[in-house]
Image 1 (tube, rainbow, N blue to C red):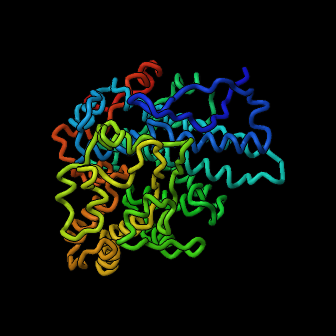
Image 2: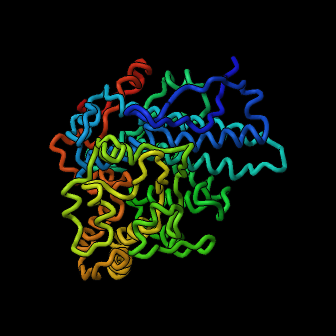
Image 3: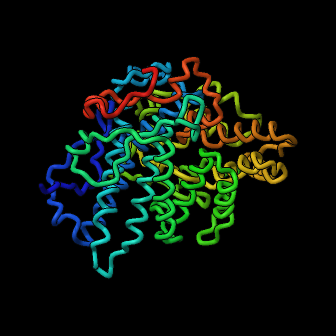
Length: 450
C-alpha cells in the first residue's frame, strides 16, 4: 500500500481566541512517489520539519512554558484547568496540553524521518543532500531528547540504571499510522544511544557556517553537549563546550550586560547558536500567554516572586526576567500580536555554564570558577569566590536558573539535581498521554504512579 506523506508549510496563525495557533491538517496530500523525489519537494519537506518545532505543543508554547511552570520560575494566573494541573503538580494522563506536547514532538520526528529516508535518492546536483539529512537527524535527536527529559528517565534523575524511555519510531509513516503505531517503549539508555548516533552522523554531514535560523554543525554539537551534561559524561561535555566557546567559524561572543534585554528583541545576537525564527506571518504565542489583557494578552502565567528574589542586587538580568512594566512578566518574549519574538534554542552563555558544571564535577575548580564568573561579570555582578566543589555547584546551578529563565529548562535542571521538591516522586516524570495508551492497545505502558 502506498503511504501518503505530507509537505507541511508554515502553520496559519491567527490573532483571535485563546488558542491563537490554528493547528489543522493540510488540505491536500501528495503521493510519496512524487512528493519527495525532487530537490524542491525535499526542501519544502525540510521547511515542514522546522514548522514542526513551531507547533503550539512544542517550542511555540507548551514545551517552553511548562518546565518553568512545573518548577519555581512561573506562577499560574489564568483559567485553563490543564495549566492549573501543571502548576499544582497534579497532572492527569488525560491532560490535553500534555498530549499536545507528545503528539507534536512525534509529528516533528515523523517529518524528520521522511526526509532522512527520501533525501539519499535525490541526484539533483543543486541539492545540498548532506545538509538536509544532517538538519533532520539533529531535529529528530532533539525530539527524542526532549521526550526523555519530560516523560522518561528515573524519579531521581537521568541516565540511571533502569531509566524509562519512549517509543522510538525511526521510519516514516503517514499521519494515521503514526497516531496508532504500536511501538513499545525503549529503555532510556537505548534512546540515548540513538540520539548520539543521530548527532554524530549529523556532525559529520553538516556545514559549520550557516544562518542562526538553521541547524548547522555547531547546533548539533551544542545539542550533544547538552545531552552529555544530562548523561553526566563530564569529560566529553567539557570538550564539546570548549569547541563551541573557541569556535571561529562562526565565532560566538557574549553580548554586553547592557544589551542583555536587546539580545531578545534584536534577534540572532552574537551569542546565539540557534534561534527559531518568527515573523508577522509565522508568529508564536509566548507573549500572548504571559502578558495581561491590557497589553492584548491572556495573562495565563507570570514570573514568580521566587524567581524575582533569586536575583542579587544590581543583576542586569532581573528586569528582563521579572519585569516591572508589565508587572511580574518577562521581556524575552514581549511582542503580543503578532508574536514575532524568536525562541533561543542554544546560547553561548549556556555553554559556559555547562563547561563550568562539567569542570566542577571533574574537580577542575579553577576552570569552573573562571567560567562561572564570565557569566556573573556579564550580568553586572561581582566575581564569585566559591572555593569548594559543593559551593561552586551551588553557584553554577543558581546561575543556570537566572541566566536561562523562561527558556524551558528549569524543571529539567531540577530533575538532574534531584531537587524538584516533589513529595510524590513519581511526578518527576510527566504521565504518558492517555490517548497514546489507548491508541497503542496497551503496547505503550504508563509511567509508574499514574
